[in-house]
Image 1: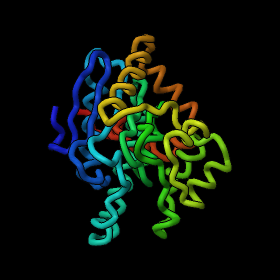
Image 2: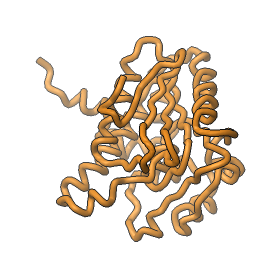
Image 3: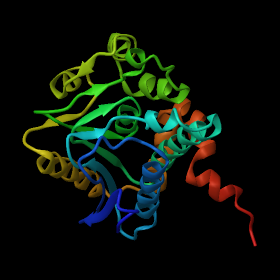
Length: 242
């Protein structure tokens, strides 16, 4: 499956792999957000899919929101980018299967939040960092980003360093501080293979996917509370019945 040439979607055994394509920064503008949401929806609808992995080609996992575009458009379009991303996080939290982020390169701002919104994170050991760049860029942090960080970064000093000091965290440090689960040696393909293997192991447990989703929401209620009205479930519930 090709989601508008920005992402590819493929099956590897029981794992649904979404890959952001190209060698660019993978800025999260409306087109990429929509493509990712389509990929997540495809995973949800795929018979026999037991886990999801999100990866990216090139140097970047994602360098955050498309701020250059946002500066050229009216405020309501800027808001639509943020709300679309809020919906993407809701889709991931409500997805009835385990999720793994393969952080194949730099993950900054919204890209960092996207990685941390997964159940587990495998990060490339030799290249790339996690970076909440808002303090350096002079941009206020979005409320639901704050909740993701509070729930997914276990140590208060680490959260402070990430958000108020703009620290760039390597894979080794992220593993040591409990922010990501594993660092994988090698290139992009090796990181993806490690993430797929981890996801396959989770899929093999044969868990009830709906139970997984409900446990996830209960584990991170503050995040779910801020995103739930924007996800695919909410959209489906609001759709008129014929």
